[in-house]
Length: 258
Ligand SMILES: N[C@@H](CCC(=O)NCCCC(=O)O)C(=O)O
Image 1 (cartoon, rainbow, N blue to C red):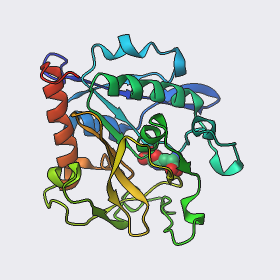
Image 2: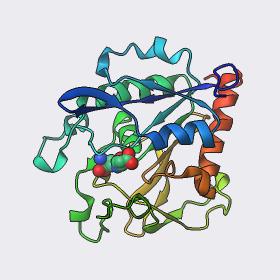
Image 3: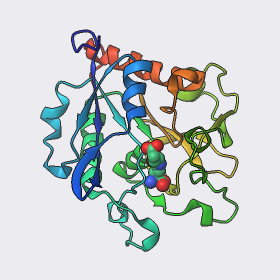
């Protein structure tokens, strides 16, 4: 049974979506299952109510935060750039919720695992910026989702990443800083890296693929790929979600407060 008495709560902010013209708040099943089945934690959806969320009180019962991927993009005004057609689609209710939650989570040393759009939000929340169409930049790979109806192809390995030695990732992964293959389903990527983030991994074309927060002592990791996809079948994904789980349990036990 999945019980709150044995599992610390982990918040996942939702995305907004129109389904049959009805406004909905959604989170992909694979994120919830990775948190529940691979990390052994209890996922809790936070609605994408934008800045209306009183994040401090909401986080009081929470021991971790997972920021999911999404087909939508952070609005460029969040990093002082003008909107163009390249930046769309948007989900400004999610932007408002996640950017507030990130700041509150970092202030209290809450373990944070940011995936794809989530890593981009972490960078923007800390003052960084994004490139809207990495595939149009000279020398860059096409990081977008493969054009296939098969999810195993969409989320299958696409390119290697070089892992920084002596970083957080190199201590978490079974093979240390040996290059690994990751999936890739993103148009955007980090352009200006936020001052308090450190690069943990790069793609062969230099695209930033993982970052860690350099100010706190806790677990704050962002990855551009999707470790949540069939996480239980992938040793790297298992290592990441289980490391996150250790940090969450540590936090829940009151052993780590900033
Ligand atoms: N929209 C951003 C982020 C891409 C992203 O999160 N893709 C995953 C969407 C589906 C899923 O949640 O698996 C970009 O394009 O860079």
